[in-house]
Amino acid sequence: MVLEHNPLETLPPQFIPTENIFNLRDVGGWNAAEGKKVKTGQVYRSDNFGNATEADIDHVVNHLGIKHVIDLRRAEEWEESDRFPHIDGVEFHHYEMLHIKWEHIGLRATGISDEAELIEFLRHRYTGMMESGYKAVRDTLEVIASGDPVVFHCMAGKDRTGIIAAVLLSILGVDDEDIAADYQLTRHGSARWRVWRDAKFGKPAIEGGLDVPAEAMRQTIAEMNARFGSLERYAEATGFKDADRLRTQLLV
Image (cartoon, rainbow, N blue to C red; front, side, top):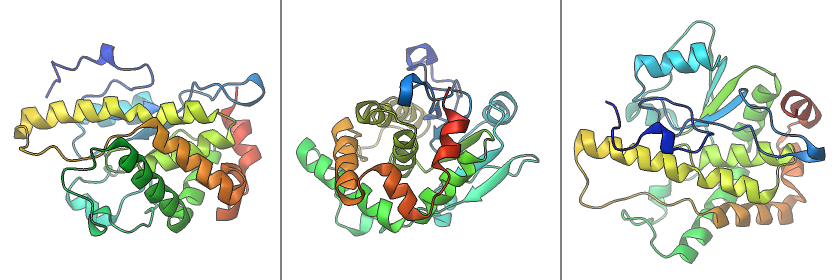
């Protein structure tokens, strides 16, 4: 299904031109430490691949050259949106980012409309997920540090995926403001998905889901810095020991 009302040329340049993968984008291109930049064409973040067309998967494997797919979701979420297909030459990793289900903590079906309340909610959720799901953070960083092209994803590509991207970019020396900007780019991916959903299933009576205000990521980083000293020191606390290798692989 072609998204006629959402042409790819309106998307920020980080986005990859796929049809039914809505939030796939390059993590590279940001200014980093010592006047360097984060390498492009190496690490990607995404929403799930359950709706991907054959052409989408072909693009990911044969154009982007992805060798590792990291799924941060619960296995039960594969029933709602399937996992990446088995493909020779692509290694699939299931690193569930452990956390209490959002629907079990009283989140209203319509989301949270008050921005200050939303930011506080997300900050608490993200910092909690970074503690309970630390193994997924460590294991994902280790795969990225291997140097092969990799994509990591969750369901919408915003929360669990946003946490991994924030830790990765911080280790690489990307400014907190740019990390927050990278996080907020998910608004474009979510808009693409809603256009597809409405065309395929009809517009829902109540629009659920939560926004991704940059301030939520800023506050998450600030709280983790207060707890650990920096996101790099947080990564070290998870057991990740290859920060220097990560910088060697991804800074140009």
